[in-house]
Image (tube, rainbow, N blue to C red; front, side, top):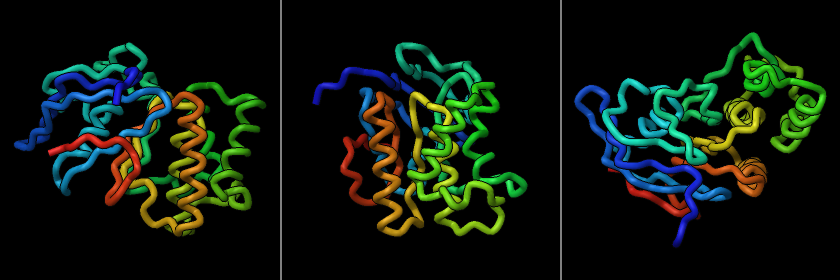
Length: 206
């Protein structure tokens, strides 16, 4: 399959303690989701965190390019990457709406248009009736959908999903997959860590 590169990893090696990931080389096109496959402990999550800038100090060598621009040394917000971590971390004092608006507020891009888009995204994720609720007390599946919405709402160029559909029932999973397909159809790209059959092009890690 020929890929017109939008996101690219070149000769990447990352090290956490005595554990090393790589060297890795792969490309992702606009509108494509690439699945990272490998056994537990092979470094899939580490790779996502290096790409997002959460483990910048662990990058030993290599290049990370998004839209032709190097991400190495760039701060987290400037990378315009949405991350849905394996373990959902939410702020208990904030509402669902405030979580979805968080990335826009940080980037000072929260206007009337963006508020309407956040409202629509909440509806598509099945969170419409929960928007004014504090996240404390939400179910695991609800919290995961909030995490997905937070990663999407500010309009990232790349989405990193670390077992993001875990804990969702089949109906909710299908709804979230449709939202993710909308993101890809809009010109984004995604890196996906998910156990089992993904239906995406895959690259082996470890």
